[in-house]
Length: 483
Figure 1 (cartoon, rainbow, N blue to C red):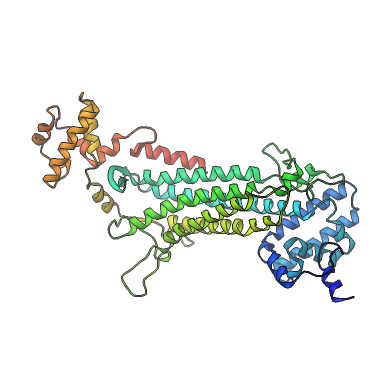
Figure 2: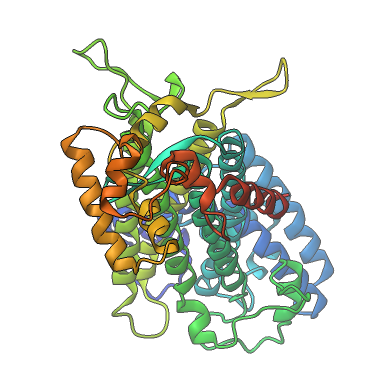
């Protein structure tokens, strides 16, 4: 057999071609060295396909048994690291199929009956991504739990709430952390929604037009767990759409981008809070680095890098959108470019969530079963900072409104009081009662309760407010939800 014949024999297509693929094109078009991570999904989908082919009488029981035997060996080889991935075979699918045929002969060749690589790869990516979404959902739950744990310990700690990065009103530090719990809860909801649309079966669409074989696609969907919450098979209903749709990958990357936005916002606050100018929190040394020249430095590298990696995920989203925007139906080779951005988005999000879970919640000490490390809170520094910037000015305005003054007039009155406090370099709560009464005669001694940080906090006792009583209610709600 000639060299050309050998080269063509290693490829999946027919003898139509008169010359082998060039080495340059082979390297340019091959995907095996990044899509081989789909191997388990590929085997799982193939086994479900083989089971259905046998049930439909399209292949024999002996062929099905041989395929299962061969796939078991291939799985063992891949797990042991002895499987030989070949560039000549282009991708994960052909590598596995070629090895299967080598192991079990003609039965391996019959496996591809009624399917194409087009619907095969679409199925594999969906199966793989479904599993990754489940892992990410677990990590989102773990991160929310870690934040709730820290919040529960700091319900009474007063933090300056900011708008425009200016001191605005005092809030409970726990209340502040629970804002991120809400964000990550929405992220988890989005992931669940993306999973629902990802969990649909394209297999059986074949190359683009369906197949002449009497496939039972619903059977395959049920075998693979591609069902709704009532157990009804979820199957792509249009063969053209089934092989070419990558909405699920784009949706996932969009949801991942939003999740990274929330991580990045939290990172920015950690970076600010850890600086000497704030000094609100510390994180364990294992999440920081030093300086090559300044021995006093502890740099918040993990939050900074997470903030940077957010842009990387955004880029993947734009790449996938651009990839799909000009494609005619049905499958095009462009779609090979969906995998690396999707894979990297999954890896980046998983790694970031995993490290934030430990950075926030600490590490389990097997000796005592307690989590240690995590975020350390400097409550005094937070409270001292809350005393700057006249954080209770709005409380004084509310006090005057309750005395009958229209809010806009109360706002103007308090502005004069703040101006006086500024000129005396003191807080509003430190102005003598006589001075305060000079701005409005209705002010009485009880004003000092509303001007205190604690009084301001406790006053906001409405649903969603920062009062400790409300925060505790929210913590209990999150505990129940996350249980």
